[in-house]
Image (cartoon, rainbow, N blue to C red):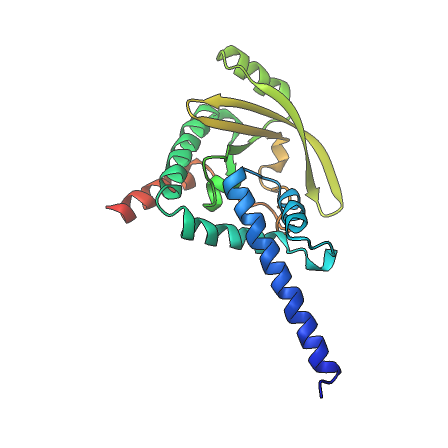
Length: 214
């Protein structure tokens, strides 16, 4: 006869299965439909699956893991080429913005980028006006936005963002104060400081890909 522990194990197993199903569906939505927001993807996936309890929602890290798995299974032929092109675009953009101490962040850096991804850079300057003037002087049309970032565990701020196209790539620039060069904002996935890479590190990524493919 089942006891209380058996019921608890069954409930936990069932919850884990629901979390996994939502993570897999969220990863599919992100890969195929171009959703970039983890919360939006998981909520849409849960609704499609008819799962509405918050306890079954996967963490962002679980969705990222499922996204990598989805790309290995279904995008193995094209995703590496797309990622390589985006990293090359990142190198060019970082050289272009060298005076602003650029750092690459996001999917192009962590390897989950696809055809829906932008090249996301952090630039560092104590005034966003200088970045805007730089773009204007170079004759680059851009769209200006704001983005809310968590700078510390208990501190968030709205920061300026500039979005424009460079060839076939979308470039998404977040401008941070210069003192943030050595203290990255918190990542939305694990709430730890964002992984970031300078130009030399991104160039090394591209060289390593070349060596692996030759």
